[in-house]
Every structure is written in structure tokens, then in C-alpha cells.
Image (cartoon, rainbow, N blue to C red; front, top):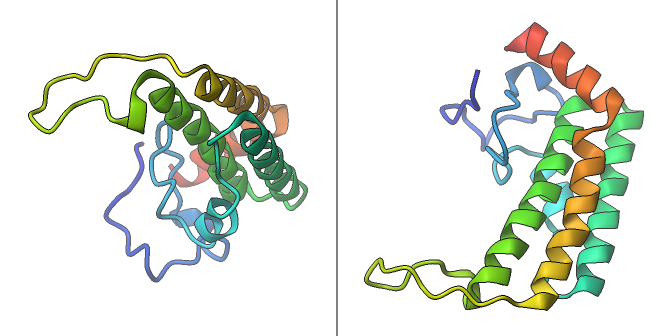
Length: 148
């Protein structure tokens, strides 16, 4: 089952109501699910490799804290932010200003920014650690079995 975008995200505390959370695919819901969005977003940065390293380490630390609390929703949200760090840094690697298309809808020319590529690689490492974590996978499977 995919992510449910029809929920009243402004009024749901997913820590109190994890049964309402659907894992979805990729980064779905990453900027909607509270209180996790507020807990993680302020740490999410990728402008330079140094910033990306600090950011990805902090977000991965939050992943581990949620894991200690058996909080699948928090773990999944941290995983999504790590994934989004990778995908956004890759977009900025390929396109100056992060824009693939110009105002007329025509694809911009790709330009490789090695600094952003390094930032993406840093996020990729932590994202891989989170998405392959055995306890995370176990919690995720159980959550999907129970709640869809």
C-alpha cells in the first residue's frame, strides 16, 4: 500500500498514532509527518561535504535513537531524510541551481559539480546503512503487516 496523502497531517501526531503511518515508496511524505519532520528537517543540509557529513551523521544518530525506542515511524522518516539528502545533492551535482528544466520546460545542460557529488556520496553511505539495518527491516515488515 502506498503513502496516504489524504490524512489530516496538520493534526496527527504520528508518534502517538503510528498505526496511521504508511511507509510508502522512497521519500513519500517526508515533509508531512510530524513530529518527525520538525525533529529532523533542521539538521538536513548538503551544501558542502563538511556540512553533509555533519548533517548525515546527526540524522543517522536520530535513526539510531528512534531504533532504541522501537519507533519505526521515526526510523523510516530518518531514512527518508537521508535518501532525500542523496537525491537532492545529486540533482545539484548535475544541474547548477538544482533545476533540471528551464522556464520553457526544456532540459538544462548537465554540469557536474564535484563538491555536490561528494555530498551525495556522504548521504548515500548513511542512507544505505539505514535502509539495510536488520532491525529497521524487521520493524518495517511488522508495521506493514499490522497497518498496511
